[in-house]
Length: 521
Image 1 (cartoon, rainbow, N blue to C red):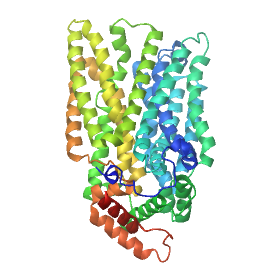
Image 2: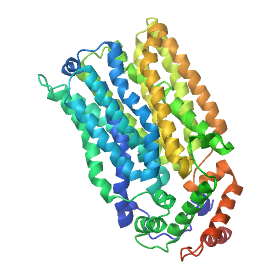
Image 3: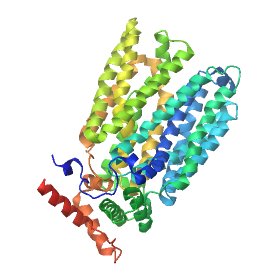
Image 4: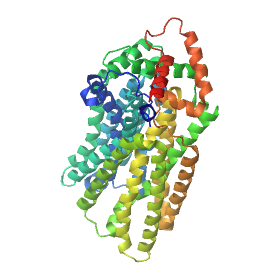
């Protein structure tokens, strides 16, 4: 296999070191990528801290010892607050820029976190979590697109897949903070400290935002092409504006955005206007709902009950086991993110879904056996939980956000991410209220619902999920919209530039170089 087949950009001259930590421009870009990653860290921390605090008696007293229904409402408040935020978050992200949306979201998160930490009473805690969820929407909608749009094409796939793995970074920190808080007896600062930690990552991100670049794709969309060119040259080629990689990427961005402009106004309704966009929407909906309804939610919800069933009843042991599981998840989520470009997204999706299905078959069988008095089956369930989460981690954790970001064109990217997270939140809200009722009524038989969901997921992945390995963001559009649409947009753009052509090799010239090199190989 030729080097070009392994990496379509291999023949582009690029003034950077092969290893990012040895290159000044790529090291500088790492700060912006870290800010993008922090959106997932914040979400992961919030998701785990409320679970850990339920074992803290002083926290439960501070929120008035809520009934199970009220406790579920407080926990679900973050998701409920996020739902009305998706449309304004998408608007702010597209209108004012990715960095502005991130800053706004982190400020709102800090306000919500402070209300939670310095208040008492169930409804006040509910209000603080509503505010935090609303701010989290801005961070989630802007953070993913920002990270994938500024990442170097050479490692964009791995960088994008790593975004969601940072969810476990937040979860791990929250789990161990709650573990430590168990030992802070007799003071409310134990649970307050856990909630105050929520402001650390947003504060660090706010300090960094003035020093990070704006998305070059957003800059081009606002006709600030020279600023985009400067950004790409600085962070892609250490200031070389004639660098082939810089020129190629800038022209690809310009042509893609011009094509989208030619399609007139872009709204949420655009998702149903063309065959390619309908396929994108179907993939987003599949990813969103199956990522929450593949059984992972119900397993997490009943983890403490399972531990109790095999004799682990001490709060320290339970929180320690949960913290260990989160570390396990984080390690294999990172592994999956790093190998996704080597093995391909479609193969990773199928491996993840098929592995989860067979793991869940065993979990269902063992749960049935335990319910019928076979005690050792409970320990078998614990072992299968790790296998199940291994398959979830290597595929779903990283690709749930990375894959939609790749397949969405610039004009639909923030709107598509908004739809993705809206559906995830709706799915999670369903889990919060329906799963406990169903499990109480039909127990382990409810697991058959998740087996059905996994079968549907495997079928849809096989038939409608294309492979995106080895393509730039703008090139992936060809898979959905066809070569003709792309070539038509390129022709129109070149005709309308009116002397604004960048004094460097054209895309056609660079592609000719690729063809010549391929023939030599």
